[in-house]
Image (cartoon, rainbow, N blue to C red; front, side, top):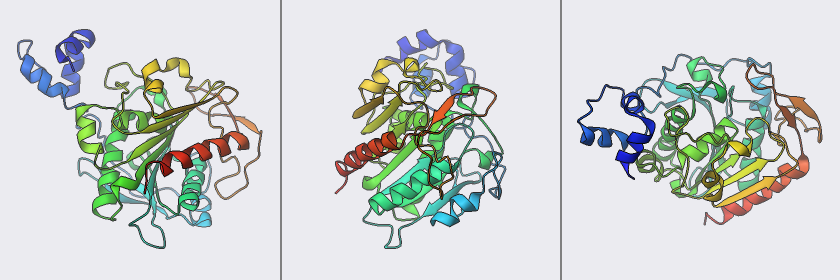
Length: 327
């Protein structure tokens, strides 16, 4: 990578912010060394302030109804953060036959945090692959209710560090096999998948030995070369991406072409909105096909329409993707 050209393009002020310090103009070697770190850990590790998931989340769904009722582990603080300061909240469900020798999936949420769709996804992955599954939280742990549109330190770089921390815990503490570990993310979580497998030296060094590949459903595609919207693609491991033509929340018009074209596979559904796999009756309920709602947040109140056919097609593609990468 030509760090000098990149420095000129985005400016010294940005690099100083990335490195968390003021850099003298003459110290080009120091700047280049800083650039290779990719993520400013101090900036993108906001304090963990919460140790207990609420019984009822802020958008009024029961945690127990979406975990205990479908046989997933409870949400509790258990994963040491990347910087070692506090523990991230997660639902961890090892397979009854043992952790080793089978796939492990980490499910990461979109903007505003974990919801019923994430738990429904985890339950499907567990059943379809006889897999271990973990639903990772990044927001409850930090006392936040956030959105990708804010472009803050609570965005994609923070979440990649959480993903690395989770992979280490699964490998080193739980005995999961990295050659069969995958990440599934939707919306902002999908953005995290794209960033987490981008061939950036800092990320590749820490992620390559943890995960085999990534699955990104209707992801954000901001790729502006700054810390809050960092570079995406090319990828150092296989990534499959799913997008919708009627998605006004994370439209593909925001994606640089290479973000999609350098994926191992890109599947586009022209008639689908954001969140076609929404668990609109909770993870334990039967979803209502064709029902449309609207995301309720102050940043972007976009349509979300359930499509059973699209969800099933996406899942068939995922099964083929995973089968091609595992024993």
